[in-house]
Figure 1 (cartoon, rainbow, N blue to C red):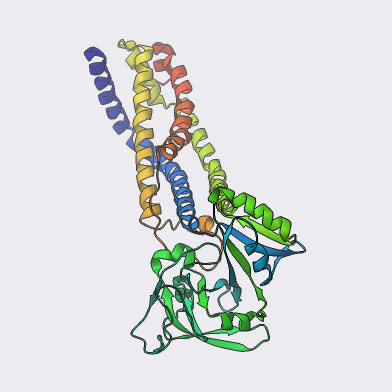
Figure 2 (figure 1 turned 90 degrees about the vertical axis):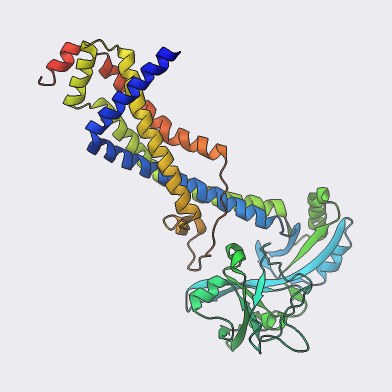
Length: 416
């Protein structure tokens, strides 16, 4: 055993010397290899982490969301439907919601407008959660008799508005400023900003605007007998699907959406975007494999002469293959570790500026948030097989062919 270890140590020493003799060529290969690993690792890290963030956030989403459907599209939900849902066995609580989207032509972005429920200040229409930070130093931000936010829930007064950090950055506005909206009838509504949402929740609140019920109905022209949809809480979590089917049977024009369906939708979206990026960059991986094959099969005259000399002085074919194996292992492992480390820094410290637009979305209004690292062994192993294995396969066969040639032939064909 000691003899084998000593032999491998000598082979590694010789391999390092050989690599240093051709450092320009090997540095170029190492740079390209590291770039490939960096691209794939960044895509995998970002996609996996943002999926985990979304899954953690959506755990607090409603168990069932009930919408009214007209001609296959989401329509306003009649308030009298709430009593029909409450009468269903297994339903613990039913609550109406007012939320919608507003397009700001000034900046070309869509905002999500939400009326906070009386006793749930931190619940948003798609299950998003956010903490509210109020500027209490603003004398107009609070009412002496009716505070804008109570401990148990939000009570926004008419004319008041709370905005997400993404909106604040894009419009360059803050607490005390006024934000104009064009109502459905063409009238302009100026709402005063009395607070901003916490930056810690920006993944889900960047485009969010909290607005009072009166202002929301005035903006969109929604009558009192209608809401956007309803959320249902079930007594037994195991009966969520059963309760959803009962709602559908009682209200034929409704569409119950359970929490698991929302989670699957978000998971599919990020899988598709991450897969799209990997497919695009697979061309780069293929080009790298071709480059590696060409490098291994097209040995230079000096490398062929080196192999011939080694065989002439007593090296066996297995020794040369082992030497080339260590050469490939040093290059591939160095590139792999460097690429993974750079990808980790790029995604979790630098904010992934290279792939952020494609993986977050194509909206003008991007959330600004720091991802929590979620890395497991499966990701590293998958990345290893995607990058190291193709390089190894692409080099081992040409190296074996070069190592089996006659030493006299190898040296004669190199011009020696």
